[in-house]
Length: 516
Image 1 (cartoon, rainbow, N blue to C red):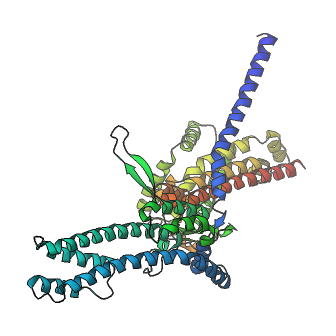
Image 2: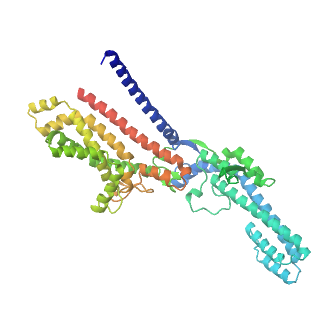
């Protein structure tokens, strides 16, 4: 091969290597940038008054005095909204009460069978009837009057009752829909019964969610199927048009102009996202049980895998003879390193839980043992390569000075191989922290409280990998807790990155110390 051709090949390989590095860097940016951007929003965001209320009432964190002073300002901003709703309901009720009064006057002295029937139905209406009761009562009266439609005297009254009942029924349904989205924004309205679910006891805790709720208040979204060729088309309609000319019409413009006064958002650094437990399936609170569970599982796996892996590597490198059995054993270790993690999960379920029964059901202990088996081949191979990379002269010098084989391994070979062993351990630790499949069957649950260390032997735990999957695919309100999902992913990625940085720093320090 000529010199010119060799240079072309060298430059081609260099260009391919640089391109591969740049491509990998671009892939990391594309993958990590959204995770970091969205994940940080779980910690830093504009929190509304409702968030501070949740923190005080559910976690006893915050100042009650400040919250009460803040509520007085917010209540003043919300009172016009409540007043409009009340006035609208009162006007509807007054119109129906007036119509009921007209019926009472019309049939008050009528001693006919029809008159007695109408008075009996009027008597069944309670004095404090709500809109639904009044509409129901008038509908029954209209049905009774319909029997006398041939009498011209009743036709006008029957028509007005029917029109009024229909109008109030439609207005009441629109009002009910409006109240649903207002509760979504501000929590229970005055006069509401306290909801059972915690998520319904509070309004929007984040400013971005409050703005979404405002859009739901201002607009109604429906699907138009009139064109069979296009299929369903999502249509946006202004909700204010349903209340044109009523007391509620100014409400929409008021909310649009005064949303900040109604919700009072403030920039917040919510570091307690790491240390708070969750409330109501992660609608509120943090990820402490998941973070602690991941720590237990990872540390437990390393406690089993590190001693076994390093000792196995020492045996294979320093004591085992190059026989067919050892070659087969090395092949099996390499094969196990590539086995899918779900296989280890099923093996952990079948062996640790069903066969030897290390615990009564799912537990951190069973999950740690399963993860230890999964990362054990990686620890063995990394430790073996690190030991084999130690110069043979180190071993010869130690043995020449009279040191025994085991003493040589402990005092010479292992310290020299320690940087490589640590690298393999940390890589394995990162894999153990991020695996989902092995712990699904052996250790993980969707919801749970933080465990004490002595509870890990017989209790399952939430964990970041499993809960990320669970919240992103199976949660009933998956779109409302996106910040929690990205916050968990960001925390897990940061944890793995910190482990790798720690390994790099530790390896550098140990290598520098060994070089003297």
